[in-house]
Image 1 (cartoon, rainbow, N blue to C red):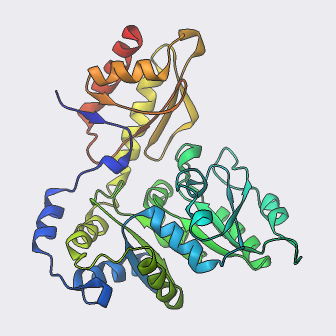
Image 2: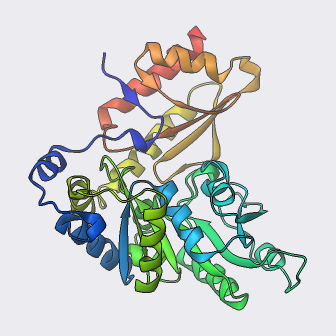
Length: 347
């Protein structure tokens, strides 16, 4: 039985062209700055995002941590959303490893942070309080349903940051999804930020890695922190080669994932007892809720779906997140819908 994995776009496997590029990659020692394939990826990423420099890193979580530790010192404070990935899913790394405090404000349903909330979160210059140093935004905003934040909002938030002497970091794990969703070059969503990470290993299908981009002085300091965190990967060109293919070939096709998410949402919403959640569909994500009157738990439905070869991510007692990606094909969609119908009857 074929397995259809909707749990995340992190489950994507490298394409055949990526595998060939990895096998043939020209290698050197990246800690010495001598891996030509890593250097090429970093230059490509920085150019694509309109930044001076890039840094190849093992994961988006490490990239966000490096960014915070580069922008902030111990005892400083970062303003971010209650639904932000750095707050929810990065093991408290900024506090545990950097001594940096989070200041949380609520995300709105569209994924944004209210501009006045940002202003009010900025600390006064008071010896009793931490210094507000950094604002973190996320685009697309995963936990709010895969929402993409517009250029207009990003500019407005950036202006608030500048008014209050805050640096602005973007967790852009899926920023290429946001750009494709809005039909704009990715640089239009990041040219106002001081630093940005994006993932190669989600919808772009590379097996490992993210890139952190910013100014040359910022990346020079980030390189030192990457070393402190154990992120120097030596002959990393074997991984960077797949990232180059990802940037060259996998960005525009993200529109196919978005189209599949729309079709999946339409089909699932027609099943009695299945409701769309968090404004779905947005970009490549579909959040669904099981009607309470069904009296069925997400765990029971998940088990029944697995019996049909479909894997889904549980996000609550009756809630699922379903993520479309390169390995979810058009002919998988009817199978997924039929599996949900069977699972509801079986659970």
